[in-house]
Image (tube, rainbow, N blue to C red; front, side, top):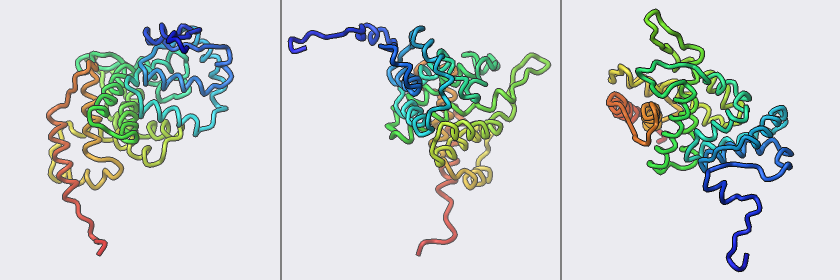
Length: 282
């Protein structure tokens, strides 16, 4: 007020200090879009939803199909382009059961990974950490909103192929052969379902398809062939996905990029720059 006293009837300051997201009235349930708004708020401000608010959100799941796709995309775009801790938004979806409105996300819950390579745990846990690493990379690199959203969505979708390909061999080792290619179709399905632009869908699909290509990559002719195939994204964007993938095992705030990833990006950048169009504008 005019005397400098804070009027705080909902104890909002305490919730902000405790990083808690809470509804303030029963009218919250009048618009199911508020659930997705809660998702992107949680990611942008590192908030955890209260049990009471999560319960109301669960009751609103039956109204998901009433939401216009452009409204859904508006909230998902803010989550990807503005989140500092995007994993909190994903955990909001899990706590409210809205994760099950997205089969590609729900499929990752509880899918195991080989502890030697993924000590952080399940595919869901890993993907959350990769999203956090991607957001940190976007901030570090000063990416614009569209680039940042593409990078975070690439991080979210990069292991969509693991639920369908994960197996345990006779030695008890867990592997997901071919999960990069297997992830392309669910990536396109998910990104289309939330209303993403066609160009972003194509780029995120390529990031999913090629995020493992640095392993055993020899460059040379292979780099030139891939440079011709990779039309929707860039070597640098793919490199950031590789960096986020390795940094999220687990994500501790420390950036990690494998040497073969560095070599891959250098080789691909050179190959891309060497490509000249046959027909020139003149």
